[in-house]
Image 1: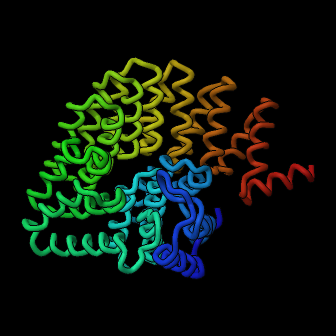
Image 2: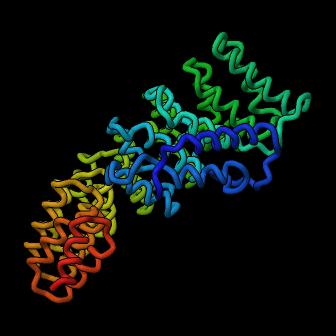
Length: 426
């Protein structure tokens, strides 16, 4: 992925935003971001031009870019969430790409939450224009708003409700309820729900909870659950827990699990990972713990788990969380070769000097080819050419030496290039 800093792309994004406001959208709409029409072009350009220079980006940021290239939206959102949480120089860019990936994955409420954090935490960011264009696309209009039309009337009413909610929420709640339960378009009902979710008033919270329970406008239940996650706080998390316990609908439970991620409800996700009877649900909860950097909880799970399948999922989540110590311990102590390789892979995606050193130690500890190939792959994922060259020079096995050279030959590294030139001169 080429890296973004040219102002022209933000001009194109603004042009696309304007086009969406004044012209019909030709693309069919579905879940996530449309891939045709004005934003489809701008989305491609933004993805192609993201960042400011490949060498300046962290390994985690590059991992997120690779996930975007592969259209692996869930993984991309998780990786960029971790980058943003570090509050470093890449945080504002990471928030934008987190929102982009979430929107492409159909999780618009979570995407809007990331964009709000971008605006609030980085008001001078050069990514704000891109965020505005993304928000316009998430409006998902079926047709242009024509002056004097019913669509314009609905939108004006919604703007008035938003203003009234800020000034007099007690009067706004009954009107919002009528709006949500009435004959407005699905898109505007979702926007009304969004307005509702921005209020801290008890009346607004009760109405949002009713929709989240499915008691009011069941078609908006998933969106209301997501809004509870965005709202966060003990009351919202308690409501989500009640919904999870009462519902047997897998889609509702999945929505609650996603909302827990947004609300950073680690204890509740851990409870699902420990106790849910569905192994697949447990695995999804474990993956979320990794995205939440819940290393202590993952260690606790691993120490008590007996299922190889679940233990492998925990190791994968440790890799996402960057828990080098736990992964190194598992790689050194695991008798099961499959789990040992999973731990090694986790060390590879953490990409730090400590994890690189741990991988080299494991290469020296284990003489079997499969483990050593896993270490080679881990160092390749890290783009750690220096360590691979060290292994190549010490390795006696011709097959493993050949495999290391194959990896080095496709790495953009001065050290790897020097080695290739030296081999040609010999």
